[in-house]
Length: 225
Image (cartoon, rainbow, N blue to C red; front, top):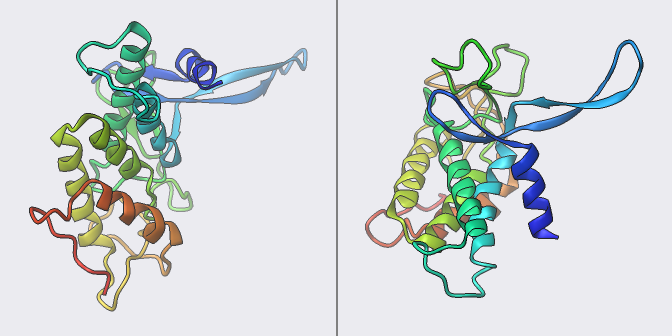
């Protein structure tokens, strides 16, 4: 079931940008022919932050959940493909944190290769003050994938990326009286805070930062209060 699902994702929903060859996921949206009324599907190059769990899942799938020993330098063809896709999605999700605040947006749009802007731009956040796209509500998915990728491969870059993201949360989301707040637009520095902290920040995001072993003495995590 897992292999069938991932095959479908790779075949229909995964693509690369023209400019930087970033691997990203897309959505299938229902469409209807205006003349015949026939139902069809259209590709929308939209990637929610929620999808950023997928990179870590692809990498974890190569290990079969840690149930077997393997050499990352000697994978079979399918596992090699899954690792390339997984690691690519992780890298692309981290790339979307290259904003004014260093934090990722709720929704980004990737630029398809036939787009006239494809030579200059990989992704963007939809403009508009009434959209939720630009906000960051302390979601865990990118950090989750960094945690899984680091634990599976031991590659130090995943810890380094995680530390950079954690510093951005500290700078822009930390509340002096304790806790952390969502921000309304990752493109504005300093950002405006929202008056809430989602429970998954404590139960997931911070736990996954711990899983990256940022608290090993080299990089101490501060207490919540």
